[in-house]
Image 1 (tube, rainbow, N blue to C red):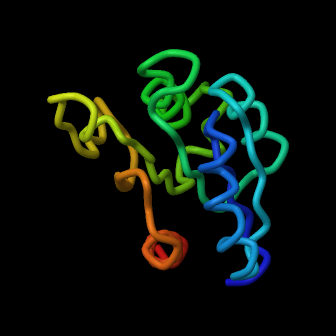
Image 2 (image 1 turned 90 degrees about the vertical axis):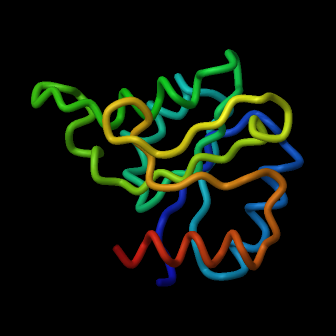
Amino acid sequence: MANEKILIIDDDDDLVLAMRLPLEAAGYKVFRAMNGVEGLQKVKEVNPDLIILDVMMDSTTEGFQVSLTLRSPDPKSEYQAYSKIPILMLTAIHQTTPLRFGPDQEYLPVDAFIEKPIEPAKLLDQVRKYLKK
């Protein structure tokens, strides 16, 4: 469990800090990217064990685009080696819009959705659950 690498791709400094503190206290190495472009670069640099991905960053669907890129079925994708990394999608979109969605292998390839804000204990439970798979 300890020393596993978690990449948080989110542009909200306060939220990232609120997640970073309990994750690091639990022994995880936490890395951060501010947007999707930086996030995809960091995936290659860090090779994280788990990704926590925001939906809305530079655009309202940026997180969706990142997940589709990482989980591309194209065997020639430059991210093929990272396609099995668990992705927890972090969102407040269900609270701020009437949109409803969930994980879908083809259209929204993530492992789980986490509603913002998340309590530290629930965050740790989700992280541990998906790192065991």
